[in-house]
Amino acid sequence: MDTGTTEQVEHCVTLEDDSVPSEAVVRAIAQAKGVEPLEMPSLYGTVDPEALDAVFKGSGRSYVQFPFCGYTVTVVSDGRIIVQNCETA
Image (cartoon, rainbow, N blue to C red):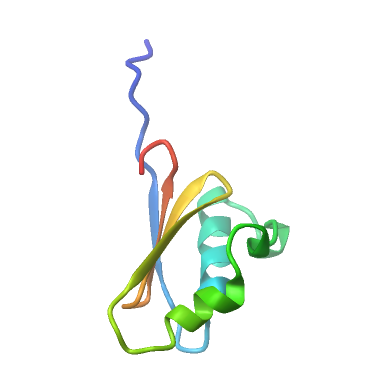
């Protein structure tokens, strides 16, 4: 029986010391989808990867949120990448 509710799916990864946000976003979405990062479409069609990386080079507190591949992606200045299904975000 369909109750009309959708299961909330959220994946959270943390930036590794040597990674940049744009690469971490692709890895996080690939993990959520259960595919390899190289199988993912280019992030550039949604957000400029260089601009995304530049936002987080400063020391200020900030976050960026955008849709990508059916998910809502939140990149937080503390190094977290949060991925949620668009239907539940």
